[in-house]
Length: 546
Image 1 (spheres, rainbow, N blue to C red):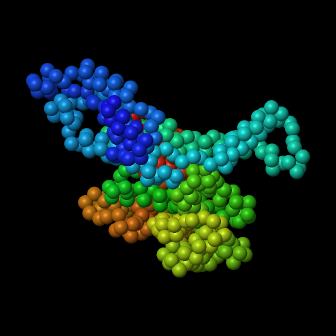
Image 2: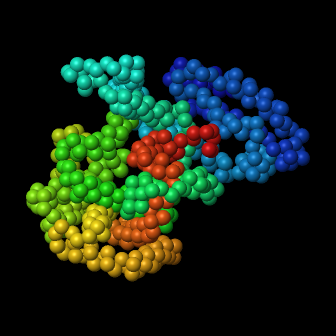
């Protein structure tokens, strides 16, 4: 080693290098009980320990490139290694050697390949993250200081009210608390996914991990089942419960265990995403149909609620808003619902006109389909966004994601319209005699029979769906092509069964409702707190391999 060190120093002085890198390899432990008789007499772990200690002292730390690097791969194996790693007690099996060589190549090549470049989403091994811009630190610090400062002033002097000109800069307790939490959240994302404080590991499927992690949310969810008081169709507690268990299963099945290539799981996950959009259509249609509140305040509140975290993260983490696609996805379909109901409200002049409403729903569906499937329509839109706002979004990818759940929102709108009509019909004669009122009255009159028909049909739909997933082989492309249509049947069947009886409608899980209350934030933050390297890996939160 001393001789090699001298040669390296001479090469640096003369600008003549024998190699770009010199790697000094530490010797892993000998499996003495596996060694041959001849080797057992000469290869001793005590001598190996002395050799490694000497190597540590000889390898210099102050030489410029090319330098002698100490290969520290597998330092945890220098004291102990499983017997399966070696067949003769001295040499590693090929699988271990390949892994070591792969890491060694990363150690040498990645600093060159990613020097001065953004490396998030590309690698996390043997390369430093790029420096975080001062502007990002300023935004985070300002948010934390402003939020905590305003919260402190509010709590220390509740009676104080600022002048009217300063009202915007003196938020309420609730707003100040939310701002401070936002700042701390952004700081947490920086620490976890833009520094090397937490190790990032690969996504690998493990049956044990899959079962255990799903038990973590299934068991407390079932244990906290309670019967509430609200028995209305798709009531708030039920939808929060629905969002909660779907989000938990997404995190455990899809994000952690890398099951996108397992088509049955992938198909079920796609149906879950469609379920969120179904609830978007159902909830917002119900609000606009009953309240007719199309004010800009209402519009701004919903859009800020859906996109604030995504936008803040896109600047902080140097990604883009479409990377956290769920906020923009729901925003697009919310605007479709808002636009549809706004046009209907203006056209009907406050009078119930089911024919006009049906025409508005059909027109919005056709326009949305044309936009998401025609590059001639969506490409100019994204080009304008790039020119005006300076955002660089992948138009084709965005249109693909919008088209995947093309009809789920309109199914939710139709379901909300039908339930509003049924509720009116159950109260007695409707105010206006229309085909929609007549339809709903006929359904109410035949409900005892139709109820069980719909339950049996729903069971049949889910049974056929499960059979197709398990026994009919098809790939992602085929699934994506059929998903916008068969997902409607699955969604309809699930909703019918979930609301088949008053007790089923009232029964929800407190644990799942709790998760569902912030499912949007959980979905977005999992990109940096749960997964790592911009979803390409996982955060090793509790130590190696956990």
